[in-house]
Length: 600
Image 1 (cartoon, rainbow, N blue to C red):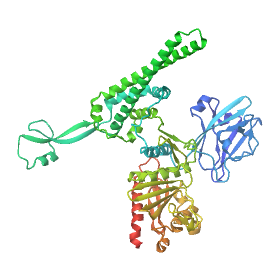
Image 2 (spheres, one colour; image 1 turned 60 degrees about the horizontal axis):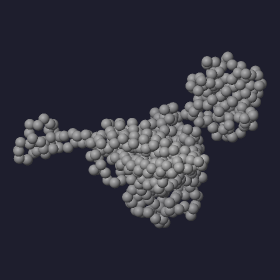
Image 3 (cartoon, helix red, strand yellow; image 1 turned 90 degrees about the vertical axis):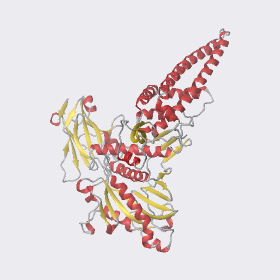
Image 4 (cartoon, rainbow, N blue to C red; image 1 turned 180 degrees about the vertical axis):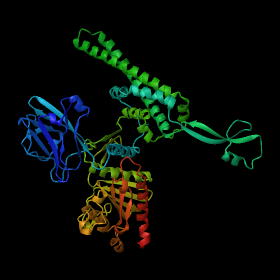
């Protein structure tokens, strides 16, 4: 039952630190845990990054307030601990600041609170909302970031992974373990095989062919042009449309099924040989049943045979399901089109019918193929501003992939087992990803601290700064034929545009972030530009600086300020953001063409 705040013996109020904002009382409670878990009781809605003080008053001094985020506060000097070391607040403690300096631990989510007064417990939920993104945009940002992290690891893994390299087991135990893992996905594998046999992905092929005149078929303009100047022999050119299963995901599926069939054939042989061996050992032990040890050993062998027969039944059911696929006409035709190493496409990963075969092939490999996201990469519990920084970095990286650049192994991806396992660690300051295309190399650095002296630079990290602003969110450096050509610097600003860029204000009244953005273009130098000549070292190596923000409405347009070499670029989660790739290509063209324009 929902209980309004005027019917409970206490008051809870969130007081913003800013004097211009009104206090926010907690208005609704419930005495039902079921209602709480159904998120049907939201007592107050707060905005992220806004510092609040919490006021708690009650007639009973024995009342206790528990709040989810109490244990994340850096200081808890106004809180007490119960016997389980859980912090709580008591009435009369004054206001408890839910922040320290500029640090506000609120993250867009739902936080539970409970108030215990006497023998009663009242529950409520505090909703923290994003200050700039809608709930749907925030969800898409988190989902897209999670997918992008896995996609990059997957893209890197393709050069290591090959379904033909199935491990040949040396003994039955390894075979049994792998077979058990296949058994755990049997129902999905069988369902996918039946579905793909009838409804595998298909495309429509168009081709033109000569047929006997009078045949009912379509003669379009292309067919008419093909017949011009040809002697009439009572035949015409017609357009024919045919269904074709020759798609990358179907080729990969065929190679995966072949690997699974070989594995199951080997497994059946191994299991049957093992069963015969156990049967012979049981027969030998039958003659010596006076020994309790032999009786115990014989019973063990009998139980082992039972497990062997269960697994043999599994093998035969799986082979029967795969046979449904193998005997389809499109599968038999596709076998002749295999190249030997079929690439894994996004369809294989995203379509659950194909993905279950990917999981099955992983399961039978000696060194399991696995993409594991490090536990510290918890996307749900990170500040939105930090998520937006990493998401922006990934959008730039995705644009490079779309423009034909191939990634090298980034430092936050650990390759294990010869490329069978990929552990994706959290992005750390200074991580640099490398992309290659023909004679171009792009080095994309995340949250890199720039040195202040020329001799502290390296060829791979060629920039230094003469200003105190030395830590942009991202630096894209361009190399051609081993020469450094220049950089693009970008900074993700999770705030309104007027909070970081305002040309209408006097220089002394401009937002501090504006000086930061401008300094990246004006204060950066490099002793490595165009090979490190004296004339080139006096040039600005940073051709453009992008201030990227999740703006909408009037803030949703790209603004170029040529006098400062700055572009204010909107980038909104959940939208196509097609302009980003266009801007990036133009920036690369500018960087690569600049030496000719200055005679370097």
